[in-house]
Length: 287
Ligand code: SAM
Image 1 (cartoon, protein in one colour):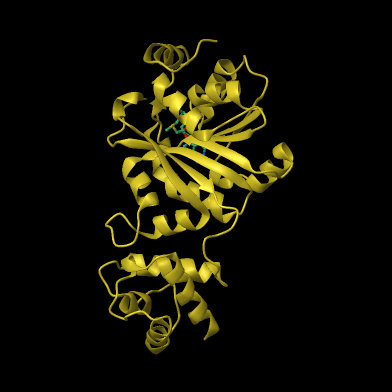
Image 2: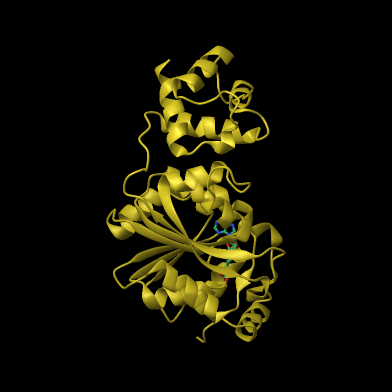
């Protein structure tokens, strides 16, 4: 089977199978071989690796992965793509395709079964409508991960890397940076996809940390504080936390905790780094 990574091959496969793009699945297939090379290079894949691919589409990136990795498992939600994948990937014996929703898979079970519990590499041109849930599911499941190399909306890549005090900084920046070291591998324009997305894209590699950068007693509480602070971005930290439905501390408890960790109650949440959110969570958990 010819390599799919160009417009002509892609159109031929789509027409042969009478496939029509489904917007609701975030289908924008890659058609540029240089971009595919960049993704593979950024992911640093070798024959010893087991790779989980999310959303293989017609198998364009999957073909590249199969050539480099030891074993590839691809999870695709759209049933119409399964017979296409069986055709386009028929030349490889190191691929397995699962028809299903990535958010409903037992990723820990996959890591155990296919890779003996060793760290998995995840590679994907993600469906943009569920980028954040997928990334958070991967991290919060505490599945052993080596790195996650993904195509995302450019603006999302910027948020993942953002530092306190910038307009891009938010709950996603803190969550990603708690679990991983983000590295921007490439910016990718809309004409590298079929159909073209309305936004610019970027390849970002998240190198998963073996130890979290801060120690916190109650991780869930810390993330509830983070979400509450950024849900009401314009408010002070004190007001944001007091008015949040996800938290049940009194105004006084919050005021005292903010002071106990040496912060000004008038500060905004967007100024705080991970260490300060961790300290605040520990302080509130103690009370
Ligand atoms: N990997 C292909 C490529 O680069 O050409 C396709 C990428 S396309 C941006 C996203 C793919 O994810 C589509 O094939 C879509 O059907 C699939 N998808 C969407 N939601 C999914 C989900 N919840 N679980 C698994 N796959 C999903």
